[in-house]
Length: 179
Image (cartoon, rainbow, N blue to C red; front, side, top):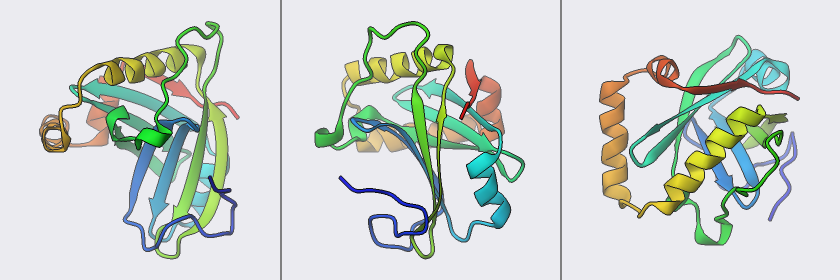
């Protein structure tokens, strides 16, 4: 395990491609944002802007939806429990109190240098927490379709929903993050 600290290097070797990565593992919910050269405003929006989240389940994929403030528009990251390394796999607890709020850690990394520019923790609403964690448990209970079919399913979804805004319109579950 490693500590992630603002102003220090993110583990791995830059440059990182621009993308968002959502993950649920033994460490909990995490959103990693890799921006080639994040602007001051993007950094501030991750740190302090209104955070909104949603998700859509399409076949074997959970599309995690997110936006921060005014400068980070709706974006998506696909997720499969089956792609989490076995040593890090965990399932959300099923018997949590109905008022439980999951914690999400968001890390913004400057993709070109690998330097961490922002870290923020937010919580999901209880309803969103339950729905997302139920979706993760349901996904884990199904047999793995394999990398090729998984990638094909992502491509099929991108044809049906060419933009993240299209996915947001389909999201039955959305929430505003609370610090």
